[in-house]
Image (cartoon, rainbow, N blue to C red; front, side, top):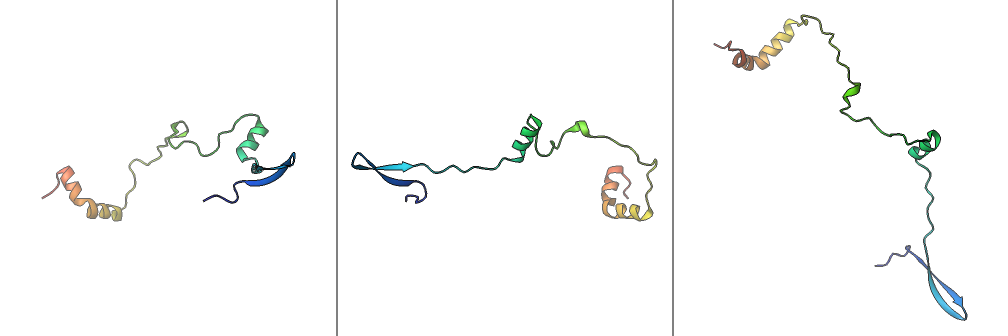
Amino acid sequence: MQRAVARRQVMRCRGGLWHRTVMPRPRKIHPPTVADELEALLGFRWAMGRPPKQDLANWAIIDDWLDPAPVTLAEVDVFERYFGDLFDELFGLGD
């Protein structure tokens, strides 16, 4: 199936004979992208987007925990309830 909008055929007269010529599509003019505008403004290509996830140069390690860390009795009860069997296995405190 031929696309109807692909090309226009025009009949032209050359020396008394009619010739069929194919006219190209007009080109769309796209507006410049943000990267293109920045490059024109700054004079060099600017890296767009987020920095890499694993760029460790910008990471900082902060150790501001209290020694010893405060834990409430309710938090201890939650850990004993959900992880009691695991703690018994790891530390040998079982019956």
